[in-house]
Length: 145
Image 1 (cartoon, helix red, strand yellow):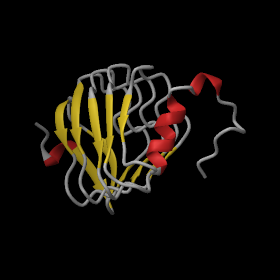
Image 2 (cartoon, helix red, strand yellow):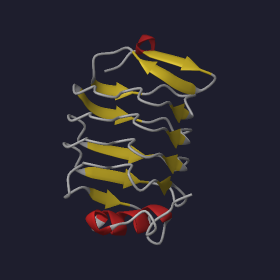
Image 3 (cartoon, one colour):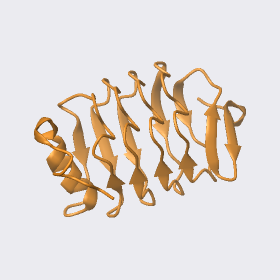
């Protein structure tokens, strides 16, 4: 389990993770996870996001191969490109909100069997439908911005 001392937080933005991985709980008050904060943390097995989280920046969890499942809280509205790139152990993404925009490359090089559970007719459900066929996308096919 993580300790509050494992995190460098500035004005609600998680800037750096100093821990060794395992099961982590991101502290309440964090509304943004900065770029590359957990990048390459192969020992990370699970992450609990705070309810007030709004944004997950580029490459935040890139290469976290031990991560199996994530639940995006209702307030999350944006997951940037490559946020979870190369998380090959990731098999499940649960999205609680209706309005989260997931960038085209957010789950690049994750398992082709990655399963999304998202509210029906939400932005995330449309992303999940497209994820199944991501090899067929061109840059003109999907623009989340």
